[in-house]
Length: 379
Image (cartoon, rainbow, N blue to C red; front, side, top):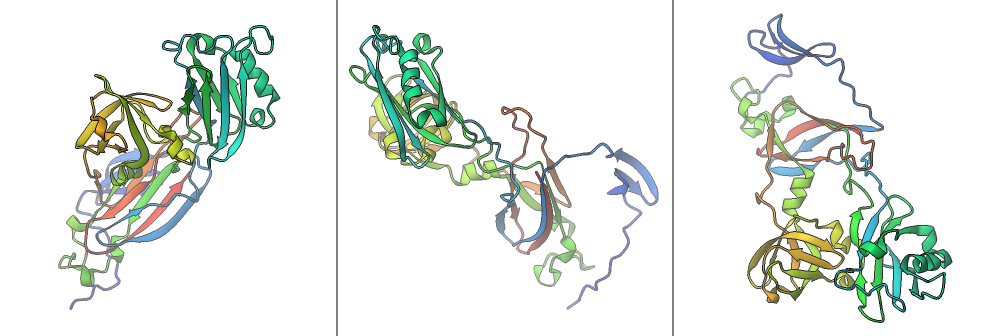
């Protein structure tokens, strides 16, 4: 058995090679001659925190590059809208109608509720926005936690509620006109409590150390004892794609309410005790959904309004009770090959609407031998 001595030979200067040739320059060189170079002097990525380390990517394994300790989560003010559907319920805000609001925390623990009846003869309750403000101002806790916007409610039927603190999750139920229509509405998610629920970072650098591969047992070495060039690679995919394809299921259960050319179904919000059960944290308009209760079925979501979900395809009423599941194509992650060096970078968010940070990656070793890796991550 041959043993590779711990020697480091100089590079072969007779071939073209990519190197960091000079300070802050990337270059293509041949021997002592620089054939092309790229000035990297302007490369500057401001970060708040960083981490670095080493890991061993085991043969035939996959591993998420952990960013939890330094990740940016992008806290937001969570907001919902409630739609009284005034087109089909034109009298829902009339004199004498009663409305109820209830607030729960993220664990579905009751916080406080209030109700009010519209009375055109009482200046504090003469219309919906006025009565809502009166009860809100009289509340003990609700007014310290959330705020309402009812400025256009009478004309549009839309009522908005926003959390008073970022990164705070609530659960709401607004019941319109309990005396007549009795329309319960769990809210339509407009703004989630965070931009990046799994965290994101500013840059990721991964550097495989093929010189530390155990070539005595891998069967991957050439005659000189070096790892063969066609074995010097690993693979990666963004975590979002990886999770979507490997864990597409949710606990959101659908209930068939009516079958029309664009079928309308409901999700039963009363069955899910935590905020993570709200459909808005799992599905969006234009998502492709799948359920298989009485035969495989796929449809696009056209609209989500509270508990009502409008699909673009007729479905079997017997599918009521099945679970909403994301349908993705392709069915497996699209792994990308990486040879000697991987560097991914994002940018800096300024507005709440910005999505400039990058998600972490999942690493895959398609070989039977282990690959030592070094990494640096900045946020």
